[in-house]
Amino acid sequence: MFVIGIDPGLSTLGYGILEARGHSIRPVAAGTIRTNPGADIGERLAELYRDLTDLIAEHQPDAAAVEQVFVNRNLQTATSVGRASGVVLLALAQAGVPVAEYSPSAVKRALTGYGNADKQQMKKVIAMRLGLSELPSPADAADALAIALCHLQGAPMRRAIEGVK
Image (cartoon, rainbow, N blue to C red):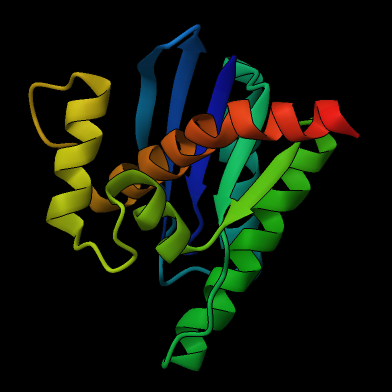
């Protein structure tokens, strides 16, 4: 099973792709998609869409985990992240990839047991769980790997619950 984790952002969108086989999870790809802050908003959203659809076509994920947009103190940041998140959800829906959304605190709680874990703690857990020799970076890609890992960690429970229905 291939899972793509996405940390939406208009200036920088982070992605991380993991493959799960049995109890083994391995990183496949991680990185960022960046847009030019000086460009028109429509052009930036179109660029995100093109790059993301290319990424989805290349890796053909079975599922996606996306960080939920939360209300930030900075309304402009929240608005731009919301726009980027809409493009992400559109691209995934058009590709037929099922999406689960997770709040930042839910991801932190799932991976560290503490919903207020800091970035360094998260990076250490990700590196340990994925067998990485270095801490993942940049931060947006590390966040996306954490989101994908959170999704994979909860998959057995979701399957068990769905089987009960």
